Amino acid sequence: MSAHVEKQLDPLFLARSYLRRRKFDACVEICTHMLEKNPYDQCAWYMKAKALTEQVYVDEVEADNDGIAEMLMDDNSIAQVARPGTSFKKPSTSGQGTSTSQGIRPMSQSGRPVSGFVRPGTQSGRPGTMEQAIKTPRTAHTARPVTSASGRFVRLGTASMLSEPDGPFINPSQLNLAKYADRPGLNKVLFDYLFYHENDIKNSLELAALATQSSKYEDWWWKQQLGKCYYRLGLYRDAEKQFQSALKQQPTIDNYLFLAKVFVKLDQPLAALDLFEKGMEVFPGEVSLIIGSARVHEGLGDLDNSVKFYKKVFQYDASCVEAIACIGTHNFYSDMPEIALRSFRRLLQMGVSNTELYNNIGLCCFYAQQYDMSLTCFERAISLF
Picture 1 (cartoon, rainbow, N blue to C red):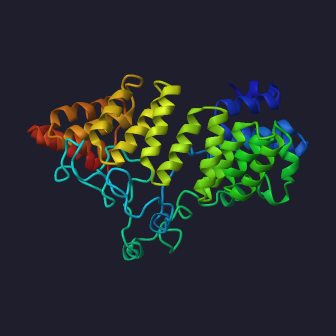
Picture 2 (spheres, rainbow, N blue to C red; picture 1 turned 90 degrees about the horizontal axis):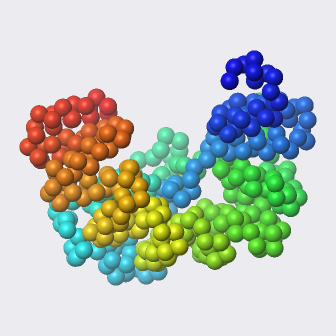
Picture 3 (tube, one colour; picture 1 turned 30 degrees about the horizontal axis):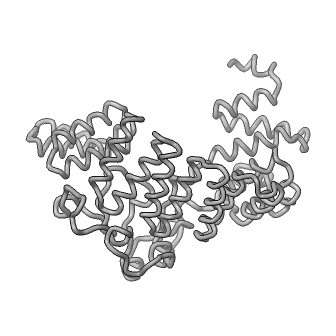
C-alpha cells in the first residue's frame, strides 16, 4: 500500500489494517495520534492496548521455565518418597517399558532421559542440594541465583516506559478496575495488557475476580484467567480449582493444557496422563494433547509409550518438528543411526538449520560409517556456532 493511498484512508481503518497485518509499531503510532486528539476514543485505546500486548505476547502453555528457587524450595509434593514411575523426581529406573538402557542414552541431572527437543524447563538441571544451587552461575541482571523472576518474568513495564515519552500508556495504580470489569468490550483487552505487557499480576487478578463476579460466574474465560494468575503467583491448588471449573463449564483445548500443566507442576504425572486421555476423547486428533502425553511419558522414563504418541502425531501433523526430533533421538540411542539420519534430514528439508541439527546429522553419519559426510556436517555445525 503506497503512502499516497494511506493518507487518503481513515486513520481508524488504517490502524485496524496494520493490527491485522501484525505491523504493531505503525498501529501504535496511529492510535497515539488519535488519542492525542481525543483521549476518550475507545476504539483507538482498544487497538493500541491490543497492539502493545501482541508485541510481547507469549503462550502461557509453553512458557514455563523454573528457576533454582522454585525447584529447590518447592513444597508442592504429594509424597516425599514416591513410587518409581509415579513422579518426575523419581522416574522409572527398572528399564521396564524402555528399549534403551541408561548406559546408552544420557540422562539429565534430575534423572530424566535427554530429549531430542529443547523445551522450557529442560535447559537446566534440577539442583539436588543447596550447595549446588549456590554454586550455580548468576545472570547478567542480578547477583541472585536464577529464578523465574530474573528470567522471563522481568517487568516489561520498564521497557514500555522508555518507549513512551510521557510515561506508560496505562497506569494500573490509577485505574478503577470495578468500572472496567462491567465493560465486556474493554475488560478483556485490559486484562491481557496488564498480564502480558505490564506483568502486573496483582491488578490482573483483581480485574479477573471483579469481572467473574460481574458475569455472575458464567464466563469460563475469566475463570481461566484467574487460574493463570494463581499459577503465576504459585497458588497451584487455587489455579487447579479455577481450571477445573472452566473445563466443566466449557471444554476447550487450552483448559485441558493449563490443568495438565498444574498437575505436572504438582508432580502428578498420572493425573496429567488421565486428563490428556479425556481431552483426546473430546478433541480427537488434537496434536497439542498428544504431544503433552508424550512429554509426560518421556519425563517418567517410559520411552516406548512416548515414541508411540510421537508417532501418532504424524497421523495429523507430518511436519511436527518436536515429534520428528524426538523420534530421531530415540532411534539414534537405540543403535539405529541410519533411521535416525532420515529424521534429521527431514528436519533439514523443512528449513531447520542450526548447530544442533548439523551436529546430530554428523553423529549419525559417523556411527553409520559415512565419515566424509560426518566431517562436512561437523564443519558446518562449527561455522553456525
